[in-house]
Image (cartoon, rainbow, N blue to C red; front, side):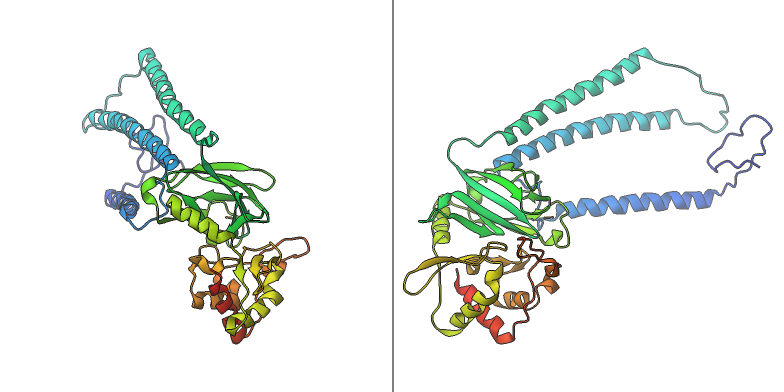
Amino acid sequence: MVYYPAHFDRRPPGNYVYKAVRNDDARRRRFLLRIAFVVVAFGALFLASCSSDLPQSSLNPRSTEAESIDRLWDFILILGTAVFVVVGGALAYAVIRFRKRPGNEAEPKQIHGNTRLEIGWTIIPVVLVVIIAVPTLTTLFDLRSPAEGDFVRVDVIGHQWWWEFQYPDILDENGRPLTTANEMHIPAGMTSELTMTSADVIHSFWVPSLAGKRDVVPGRDTVIKITPDADIAGQMVPGQCAEYCGLAHADMRFRVFVDSEADFETWAAGQLEAAPVPTTGAAAAGYDTYTQFCTTCHQAKVATADGTVEIIGAALGPDLTHFGGRTSIAAGLEENTAEHLAAWIDDPSSIKPMSPELNDIEAGRIMGMPDYGLDEQQIQELVALLETWK
Ligand code: CUA
């Protein structure tokens, strides 16, 4: 027996046994359900896009580069919408105008080929593709061209699961570049050129409202330019790793602080200073704990009371010299408060999924911050120390 789907209206020729269960009510209900689903799904998406509380949006561009990408997007969206309206309109017209009407059982006129139409629907898309290709390529080449004039160079290094930022032209008295983590400062109204690589796996650097996405690949340099709008000086723009890189990929965030030029200079000068080694109180006790545990992975430039400046610790995790001056901890995951920091030191993996048991210090491979089992007092002393390192 041959079954035909319910919508197969016309009895096929020949001696087939034709059987179709037609249940108009059920069909209509299914159709309405589908329509309702589409309306709700698209409605939710549409409403979500109206929220102004989405700082990571490329539709809210705040740099020369992001604005050029956004312009291209707008242009293609408008063109695509026009094509959709024309094609969808023609389709709807044909479906309604030439639909099968009751009582009309005649076969439509059978035709084959229409040279004019075929040439038309070959040439028009080609022209449209060319119209899209020209601004697309211009934008791409613009974005990839080297920065010109005065610009700030930043070296970005992706790590599982945090970001290191070095400024190769901003050096301290010993030629050590400004080094910080998870919070990058760049001046407004001026180009910063980021040269990026990875210490382990592939990451992707993405600050949606400042620049396009670019992969951060071990053994390779990729470059991205950011010229923040002059009028956003003083704003923080959040970013995010955009390439799946293991356990804490979603928590591999960072913050870009767009400073006025003067603020940027002040910040940079401050970052080159050494952190004071405390001599009294909880912070001094914290420093003992610090040199016992934290230096295994974290580097800091410290100045003792007699003025000796030295670099302590291994540079495997974020540089902590100016930890207290950062607004966030755990790669942009939480605000930098004493409570958050204490909870983090107490049990880091409960806050951010990591695999510190896989750490191989010898090989320089770090997969997360370990829980050293410090007691409450040691933790509080460490917090006291780190929060003074502004
Ligand atoms: Cu790094 Cu995802």
